[in-house]
Length: 342
Ligand SMILES: NC(=O)c1ccc[n+]([C@@H]2O[C@H](COP(=O)([O-])OP(=O)(O)OC[C@H]3O[C@@H](n4cnc5c(N)ncnc54)[C@H](O)[C@@H]3O)[C@@H](O)[C@H]2O)c1
Image 1 (cartoon, rainbow, N blue to C red):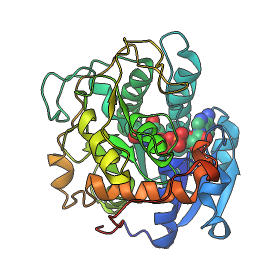
Image 2: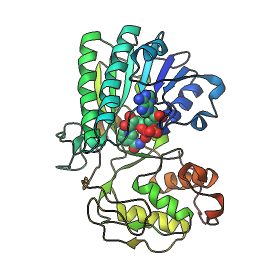
Image 3: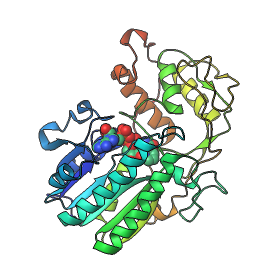
């Protein structure tokens, strides 16, 4: 499938990952519509391409509006989702992520969309029985959000069988980079580092697989170009596990903030040192995804963790308000690495 002139609708296109996908599609010559309710997305994320795209402010739960936005589309990139969804409060996440995804699939079928690429998640595997986890690893989600992503995969398969459009589900590992939202561990470490404070580690032996967002976008483009796929699921990841303690050391060293601190925070309890943050009640010990299937398409991740973090740090320094930092609170830059290496 050639991307030039392709009509692509990106749900959640004003968010972190969706806006990167939108930029890459515009650069490739596609005609792009962003469909987003702006609950977590920002016009600011689209400022570089706003003259080249159509923006529809709409909810994926609004099937009528969604259907109109999808009219004439060739491809849908479905990124809209509620991130989170706790055991105490699962309903909104369930509605947006499952009912919303089913709306996207139904409306796409009616509109004659040829291909849907949708965001799934590493969280569907639950506690790893082995790492790296390949696509055949058992799925035992620990959290309601992960159940919604697994359910979406099952619905995608059903719609593919009934309507014959191509469906590609991408199980992202921990994607990071500029325009990322604040809240996950690397963002907490980075924000503190820019204020001149060293990272605070809870545990530190949890292992995560950090994928720089441009690598994800490259794989997304590859999926668009792929021919002859009916239904396929890919892990999109580096396949490299980084202990959180190691992540903290890299960020501390990069910003010259000194040795990371250790804080004993029990599961589900707030931190005394990091304001407004606390430890999750249920943590996956290791999430490292085997990317052999994705590599089989000729793709591989190119940005190493230190380079990716340096790029993200530069972005945060230029956009401190994105994570609630005031320009005055920023420490003078001490990063020596440049962002190169894509
Ligand atoms: N960031 C990661 O590491 C990661 C990992 C695994 C999976 N994912 C998945 O990737 C996708 C993009 O995630 P992200 O990190 O860019 O998050 P994000 O919150 O930045 O983007 C989600 C976008 O969806 C929009 N949205 C939410 N509810 C909506 C609704 N009801 N109708 C229309 N739009 C709605 C938000 O406004 C936002 O712009 C999501 O599906 C997420 O579950 C992300």
